[in-house]
Image (tube, rainbow, N blue to C red; front, side, top):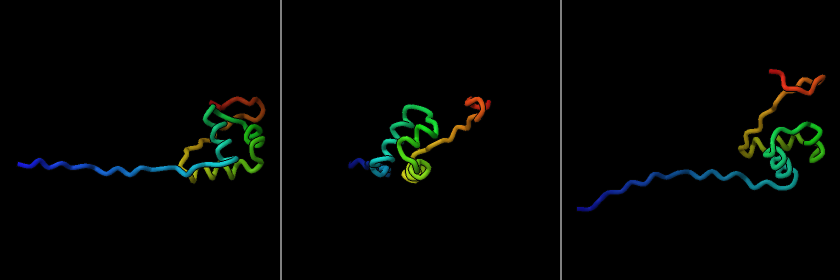
Length: 74
Protein backbone atom coordinates (compact mmCIF):
# COMPACT_ATOMS: atom_id res chain seq x y z
CA UNK A 1 0.00 0.00 0.00
CA UNK A 2 1.37 3.41 -0.93
CA UNK A 3 1.16 6.36 1.32
CA UNK A 4 -0.27 9.60 -0.05
CA UNK A 5 1.45 12.79 1.01
CA UNK A 6 0.05 16.26 0.53
CA UNK A 7 2.25 19.30 0.59
CA UNK A 8 0.92 22.80 0.95
CA UNK A 9 2.53 25.41 -1.21
CA UNK A 10 3.41 28.62 0.53
CA UNK A 11 4.01 31.78 -1.37
CA UNK A 12 7.25 33.35 -0.31
CA UNK A 13 6.83 37.08 -0.32
CA UNK A 14 10.05 38.87 -0.95
CA UNK A 15 10.24 42.58 -0.48
CA UNK A 16 12.19 44.49 -3.09
CA UNK A 17 15.75 45.23 -2.09
CA UNK A 18 16.02 48.80 -0.88
CA UNK A 19 18.85 51.07 -1.88
CA UNK A 20 20.21 54.45 -0.90
CA UNK A 21 17.90 56.77 0.96
CA UNK A 22 15.10 54.19 1.30
CA UNK A 23 17.43 51.78 3.07
CA UNK A 24 18.86 54.55 5.27
CA UNK A 25 15.40 55.70 6.36
CA UNK A 26 14.29 52.12 7.04
CA UNK A 27 17.38 51.50 9.18
CA UNK A 28 16.71 54.72 11.12
CA UNK A 29 13.06 53.76 11.71
CA UNK A 30 14.05 50.29 12.93
CA UNK A 31 15.78 52.02 15.87
CA UNK A 32 12.50 53.64 16.96
CA UNK A 33 10.46 56.77 16.31
CA UNK A 34 12.22 59.49 14.33
CA UNK A 35 11.51 63.18 14.01
CA UNK A 36 10.88 64.93 10.71
CA UNK A 37 14.21 66.69 11.17
CA UNK A 38 16.06 63.37 11.52
CA UNK A 39 14.40 61.97 8.39
CA UNK A 40 15.02 65.19 6.44
CA UNK A 41 18.72 64.89 7.29
CA UNK A 42 18.67 61.60 5.35
CA UNK A 43 16.42 62.78 2.52
CA UNK A 44 14.72 66.13 1.99
CA UNK A 45 11.94 64.24 0.20
CA UNK A 46 11.55 61.79 3.09
CA UNK A 47 7.75 61.64 2.61
CA UNK A 48 8.34 60.12 -0.82
CA UNK A 49 10.79 57.64 0.69
CA UNK A 50 8.15 56.68 3.30
CA UNK A 51 5.71 56.10 0.43
CA UNK A 52 8.33 53.91 -1.26
CA UNK A 53 8.70 51.86 1.93
CA UNK A 54 4.95 51.40 2.23
CA UNK A 55 4.73 50.37 -1.44
CA UNK A 56 7.45 47.78 -0.72
CA UNK A 57 5.26 46.31 2.05
CA UNK A 58 6.69 47.95 5.15
CA UNK A 59 4.19 49.16 7.74
CA UNK A 60 5.28 52.71 8.59
CA UNK A 61 3.17 54.32 11.30
CA UNK A 62 2.99 58.06 11.99
CA UNK A 63 3.05 59.09 15.64
CA UNK A 64 1.62 62.56 16.24
CA UNK A 65 3.22 64.87 18.77
CA UNK A 66 2.07 68.13 20.31
CA UNK A 67 4.11 70.82 18.54
CA UNK A 68 4.35 73.03 21.62
CA UNK A 69 5.57 70.39 24.08
CA UNK A 70 6.96 67.73 21.77
CA UNK A 71 5.07 65.10 23.76
CA UNK A 72 2.71 62.46 22.42
CA UNK A 73 -0.93 63.31 23.13
CA UNK A 74 -2.46 60.47 25.17
